[in-house]
Length: 148
Image (cartoon, rainbow, N blue to C red; front, side, top):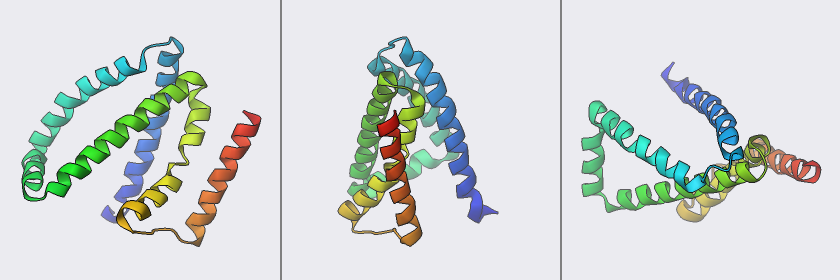
């Protein structure tokens, strides 16, 4: 059971991302400021996830990891910066067009995951089938752009 838990988590994420984008589109249609929305989300996230990490005992583990391995700090900063930047741009994309089209283009991010995993870490996780899937994603984006 545990070996397939990743799939349940991934599916749950897609459900909540879809819900989030539906609500987000309605908020951004009202021209709500993206930067204020991100600030508000951050204010909610800090106490919630800090409390959860303390309750789970992972806060101490994370602090110890940062003290023992400085690359953890740099990776944490890189993750945070890339997440916030991606969020900023997808919010603006939804505001400029709509959540459906922005989301359909956004699902191309695995192509860039492959690229950056190789560029930064010299790891390559692509096989024939995932390569074909990536090409299908790019073809889908081209269709959306031409007909959108």
